Image 1 (cartoon, rainbow, N blue to C red):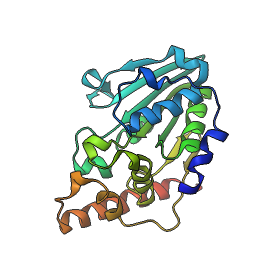
Image 2 (spheres, rainbow, N blue to C red):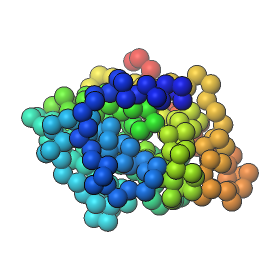
Image 3 (spheres, rainbow, N blue to C red):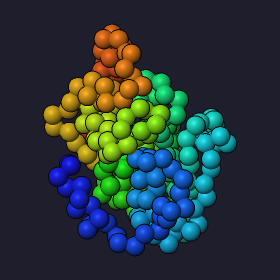
Length: 228
């Protein structure tokens, strides 16, 4: 994917709704990159967006250290969760339960996204805004400061999350369940975990357990995505 990164601006809308000069994020901030993509997809609807800060965020009845954006447009009611795994725990990095909760609660469109895959993310935000009823998008936002990697590697770390199946990209709607980015030859979970210094003290046993969890969860996802 790296060889296409310089072409991204040529295919996404040119107009910028996100003003980086008014943003105080750290260099390489995954949330800022994700928000920029969302703004481009939402266009004028972004003016209706309501933000909920991490400290006060209540999602699915539980407090969570994530940033939430809510957009209502016509009959669409969209919730976008920007998750930088502020908790810093290994289980946070290998299992995302909130999309499954959204599906169980009857959301009309549910998806996962990552700013490392801008076209995938752009399309999902568009779909959510075109869906009547509630939609939920869970966005993995690599954080150089908390995850402890160099700021210039934000996009690469996002790639590793998807390529190791630690954070699969998929969508669920009425009558469909799709894996939108398929990895034909998944990399070992080590490639993702070792790219972050926050996990440098993990034992071989813990990494093996993480690999088993990822394999189990992805197998379940792949089974759900099969034509019924």
